[in-house]
Length: 557
Image (cartoon, rainbow, N blue to C red; front, top):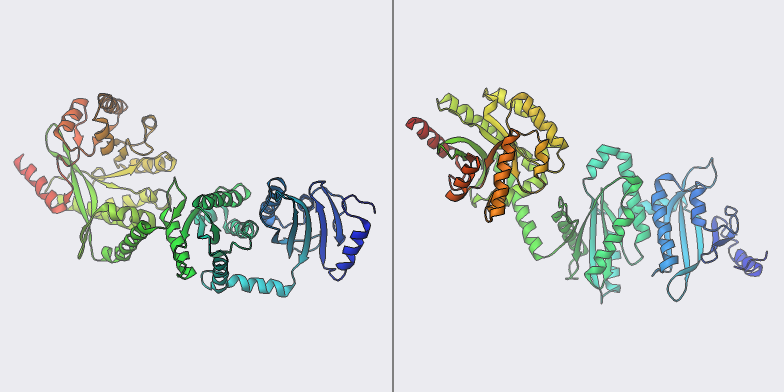
């Protein structure tokens, strides 16, 4: 055979050398001239342009592994075009070569011949079927690189850190955001396929000097050497590009990075720090990469102490309902209240809501806390009626976490029935957002029962004037920051005035939050907004103190 890529004599010599390796397939691929020479095995024809494309088109690759194989091929193609730093790549992949075969695990290794610019010009491809013992050994090896049995993984990391004593070392941990929703939406089988795809892709993306492991469920970790942090960011972005979008399913990866500044620490401690960094950006819509540092350590320590106390605090009735009065500017009388939570700790005293509400929103405890406050509000309204005090409406907050995970409408209806109170006396506040479809459904169903629905914090976050034309809410609450910032200029005051006017024109009532000065109150009154709440009138107060104020007002009248 006359071949410009490899002579017959060289081919025959190589075939003779590989005569004892009859279970493997050996191919040379000239990446520049785009043709191949098969040395062992009778699977590939000679002179195909790209052996990897041929493998995929021939249906040899198991469908669940095709995406990982694509990552493998893309990296080789990138090496042909732009160069690559390694001399070889490999992937474990299920394959079959004949229609009636079953898929078996194969090892596909590629050795590179590179030019002076590190571009791949020629490859030696070796495809070898794993023996049953090798597959068994592989499963055992994987079991000792998990979080539960990390011995081998830890040794690999220690060896790598010793090798790169003059470089920085980063522990990069990541998971799939809201992975449970993927399982619920697409099925557990697809969820498993995504995990397999990521794990298989890491075997391609990571070099021999980048130990990686699937720790638990959808959590993975890679340890890599670097010179500056820009390298880490670039590595993470390339990783995201490679392992996102399996079968066009959208999912987001959350990363935590811990720099191994103290190499005397056990590798597991660095991994723990990466976990803390990863958890610190959970739920952050703008940033999906967290770095471990001293301030993060203090914040997470604070979070841990809060979480350690929260269940006991609920059992000991440390979460207390405070009421912030809503006043009529024109009459100076209380016309309603908002129920708020205060944590009275037996040792630490009053814990500010800003110190525990965000934590509860992340870990889900906010759902239990909300239910407790709803119950307290209904008890209080029932108590006023029983004691002959004319009740005023009390509004309670519905955290957005409820919208998709809880039948809040049925729960509110049961509360009204349980405490035998008029439905108009229990009002509900929800913070509006750009993702309003699910919110609108809940609001409309609540209104059908007779509840008054308040849009909380208008003028902050996603809320805008545009949403008012279709909003199902009854009452708009102007955010305190919106009020204070826009009051500072003539243009701002005009915006507030027009917002109030337009809101009333379309039939919405309006409440201004965060009123702190007489000037603000008088301006709002002139604009037609009569109902306010804020420190100028009253800070949130214990329910007993609110009872006294309400009773005094009614006695005077």
